[in-house]
Length: 84
Image: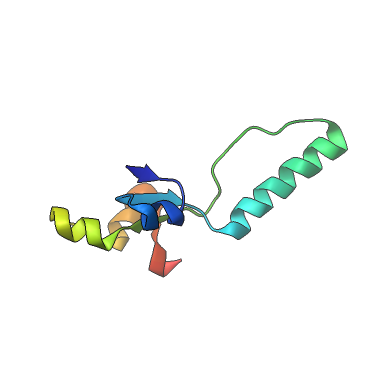
């Protein structure tokens, strides 16, 4: 199972791709202001900063080899949870 927040990793997800609260709140505020000013609903999109968090217990128990932080950043634009 892939989670959409850090809480999913704690609940047993193998990994999660998520953004920080500041990015989520900024996106929400932009959409509220656009609606309030222009009665225009902005398209949904992903935040600029995405993180990936792995569940270390499941990774070890399944023997999964994790990609390096530089590979995740270069290939997918993701930063490891500890490097954001």
